[in-house]
Length: 73
Image 1: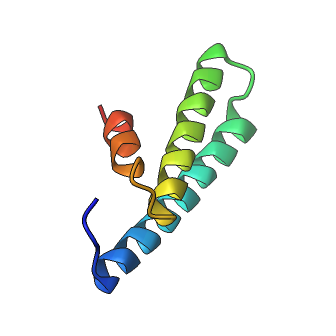
Image 2 (image 1 turned 90 degrees about the horizontal axis):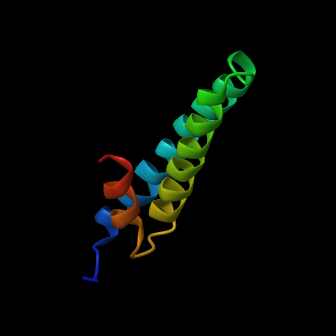
């Protein structure tokens, strides 16, 4: 992994934090509105994966870009 500048590190930290917060909000809304349907359980798992990927991005782990790429395919 290449050495990141401080600006790039800040972008990773802020975008990872923001993405985790938005994914957590979607997770909570999904639990409140449609927790009884079987598709909701599948979507909850996908949201947990997204939260994990964004948290790893905020912590600047090298595996985070791979997880985010898997999430968006």
